[in-house]
Length: 207
Image (cartoon, rainbow, N blue to C red):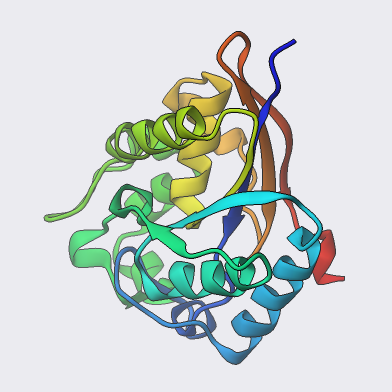
């Protein structure tokens, strides 16, 4: 029987951008004080798991969350730029309410019908994000047969990872939960059966 690789996919803690209700994309906001607390709770949740590696987006909010989790296991954080959030071009670092007023149709697509979303100049489409993140999780899973690892990333990027693991098309993106900060998704993988999503976006550790 082939032993599963266990992948814990964790969204970063609350960032200063989340706190200010700004659409962040790849703008590099640090964690807020609450985000630091959330990351510590996620670390407690995963403290008893036999982790072999911790991977993260290089953006501060994800990398710091990963550092807090990794510290419980004496592990370094391995960064992978493919795990970064969706690039939003001209929409980055703008207040969400302002974006809804200025681009009502496209923001409605962004939030509810991602397959219809039209990225602004310098931005990525949702299929492009899926194409970017998918090889990252494939390589991580292949590098850690039978081990447990953590991947810390971002909302849209994580939903893209789950979409890939489920083998779904982009029009089903909207069915995936928008996980809270530090929500955990557990995915099992082996070379015979591929990916199996055990649970998605669980934030019970936040109380």
